Image (cartoon, rainbow, N blue to C red; front, side, top):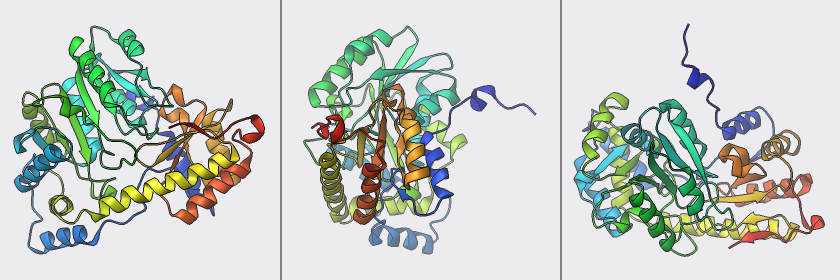
Length: 391
């Protein structure tokens, strides 16, 4: 029977490969998945239970519950500085579906899109599904700032969009405000959409996060994608949202029906409670990941293992010297009992790197880093390294 060749040829996420290998072994410290180990706060869970108990278990509007969209418009305006109203917001089945719908709407088969390198592997997988060419632009792995000259060299007459991710997965770096302004001018010059993936927007512990959409008086060129998964430890609830320019909104709204119909209704009430309820959980999350980054970074620094110091998110990007990051990740899980994300799955710029997720308990992080250091697979002080690569 026929199966689409482009999907058969599509590379799967290297993170899932390592995760499946880890699942078949005993006593593995899991540092490969970017999922908060913190639990969803009780008031959010209770809101979903209450909604289901009141019979709120039917279809919701395609674009999301009106009260949730209103709260989201207030959030992006007050927190992110993006001037948006409820009609600019669409509730999606996580940021993943939001990003997929956006790319489906603005890029046609045979077109190309500019993606960060290193960058989240799902961007490239979405491009493969849609039959569009993914053109990776260089990011300084020390500072997280995109290379504008390299970007300019990649633009073709069929380039439709520039994808940004700040704070970055996998680097944990944040694009500076001046850099964002330059990127916006670049997109304007080449008449490109900006797709700004900001799912870690509230998990920033060094400096400030600038939303790409805040550069416009009203959304015109920038499409902003957010999620409840990281900020509120709601990965399994699958609620995200897109803030789009008015010209794009009808198309995105129309896509909801054939792709998902609507987001789970009780989950939307949970998301509403997350936004309007106590925000202490957000502060706790930021402080937890800040302290873990400091602690793990200290252990790596003491061993002389090079890494990029994060400004947000919950990842550390580690240098593995001349070794291949995929091979190092496989060896670490198979022979040393610690699972990490292989750098090459994030693009060619990750060929000699691995990513460590800080989304595990302090005890497990300590055990995992001890195994990393003890493996002998990462260049340490004996090779002349000094630890942190950049602030």
